[in-house]
Length: 332
Image 1 (tube, rainbow, N blue to C red):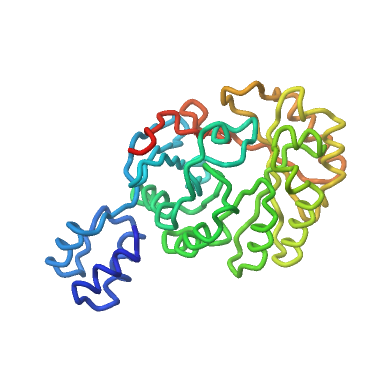
Image 2 (cartoon, helix red, strand yellow):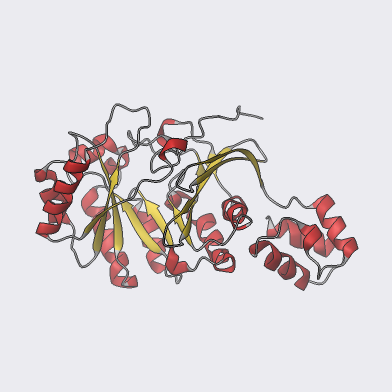
């Protein structure tokens, strides 16, 4: 919902300013449209339905996995593809994975989104409308910015959307922003008063290998990125999650586990080992045995590590797979 557009229309209609807050409360609770907002006059509901789009996004396609995961492909008003995912867990958590850009300008070699053309930054309403779509399907309580794009390159709009997420039931402490190591954004997040969690996509402790997998390492070298994360922890006192995709024969050896442990202070970092999901790249995923051995070696040396449960793989909704396979033609 574009709240600025809504406020402008209400002002044009001569309505009091509190009408916008009324409409937002309904939307944040999962309302399907203006017509159900019973504390707004009927004539106003009809006028808003005719003149203000209830969402900035249109659903192009939706896929459901057996584990309860739902992936939705949206398109924006100017035809840009955007994907978002709802993950439902056995303990009752309902977490949404949000995109911050259409496509991604950073070409990480193992990531499907990095292989598609970059479109543009998403606006705050376009980010928020991904969350509102799933809120209309039921309660939501966690959010992660791990979908399409690098959130730190669009931080103004990401943070503007985050300010509204608690109204949907997602507190700031249950919101995480993932970055490949965009240092200016990490520094800004550290200074922001919202207690949002930071996650770092690391994937290799060796600088040369990390540059091969993630070219952004040449711009923001890993030692500087680790320093920025440590500064974030010093200010926020919140652990940083390290995301590490396990690639067979590439970054999953005992020596690489030791190298990773050497650069991570266990008081500051917690490691999530991520089984690799096929994206059409040249990589294959590490075996469960190799992942377990890597985790054991890492924890023996200090940092705590967990293995992420893969969800939504059969609908290409798992980590690294968001790529809007049904691309919307440019200029549509």
